[in-house]
Image (cartoon, rainbow, N blue to C red; front, side):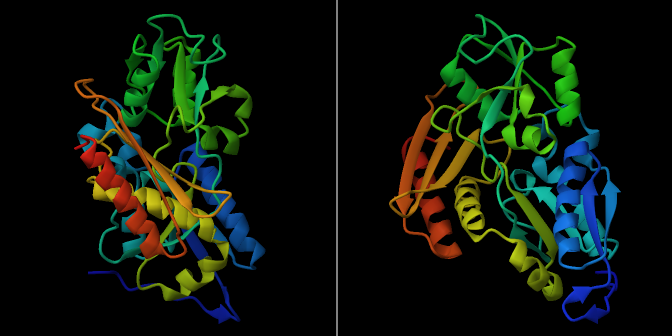
Length: 315
């Protein structure tokens, strides 16, 4: 049963206080502070509730083996359910494809660079890495895409927040690591990027680079308040990407990529890829394009892309 919600006095459309639940990593705190600033510009008083999630605590096993990326959001959702927080801010790629009953995605903020980036102290690009070089990532998506580009590399697991991953690289545990460009840019670490992969080479994960704002589904006041902060074009694009993942099973244990781009001539194009982490099957890549003006159309386009993946051998 839900705890009794805390109601706020209203002055026009301004709430007297809003509590944002966030993970306590430096990147997560940046994301929460970014949302806080946007809300304060509207005149709201905002405080942050920092939390540690199970996904932050379990660092010796891959996410696909311990419950998936949903481990980064469960504690934040509990804070919403119990009334200790009003809003949770997430990296959208960490949000499960289907939220638990009683929760809703209120908006998607303007997207940062969705691409992957190579970080290395010595080598300027993936092509410059020597034969057998050690590359760190725990993303099955990145594993299969890296192997398709450089099958000679040694790909080793890499867990931890962004600062932890960079520290492990600087300690010499890896020759290079692959990270989301968005996180590096948000923390002013763009100078660490040696190569930004174009989507044609390394297709991003669904929702990568976007921030999703979660609330309790019964908080219509917050849903209305957050609506002006949303980027509709980015929300539609990421909804299409997430529809691909949802149709394919929606698990981070699946080596799946999905990336949507608005086309100059109109319409939304989705590129998707699936690979076998054991290397027993070839990489499957597909693309679809269509007119998208509503979320139902975005979902249908994503499901179409998933159907083509399955037809190509993805499972």
